[in-house]
Length: 122
Length: 110
Image (tube, rainbow over all chains, first blue to last red):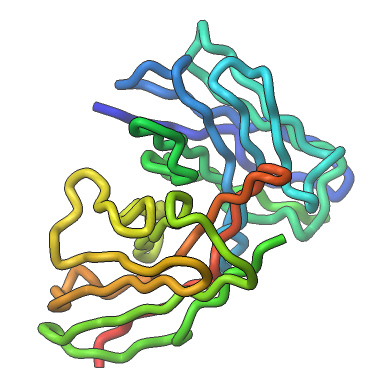
């Protein structure tokens, strides 16, 4: 079935780095744009980054621009998020999500992973 | 940047009642790019509505979306026990490309 599985979360000190992975299965990964969305403990959802299906375009939230890098390996059906210069305010559950395209891009996320927790603390 | 404001913050209703959730945008949003999600504790969000009024795959018809411009509504016609959750609206803006969520509305059992 269609599935996204995140991994790579953990506890990291402020200023440190972490790389998250998202393994996709059950759909043609190379045909869809992909996102990272995060949720701080007890808070709402915040979009983090988007990458086009072929990796040709990438967009970031202002809060992570210059620190986070989204990438993908279509041969491995895997999405990544490299997080550098981490701050306490980056503490959150990080979800990967598939971009819904019907006859046109919808702006919506139709498939979500279960999330991986990132804690930035000394 | 477009800001989405959801109201009310919390809605206290009984099973069987009708729920009406509001999402107001700080400037006009294309209806094609307005979505609604449901999130239960400890779970990932689930897409309910995209394009302001199209139900996602497998979503029961008691969920409906409407609206245009700056005012959008999610309606749950008759609340089932499994519908008590937090609901988020979300929009896509193209210049530059960005995706924004509202702060959420919690639907709780009265």
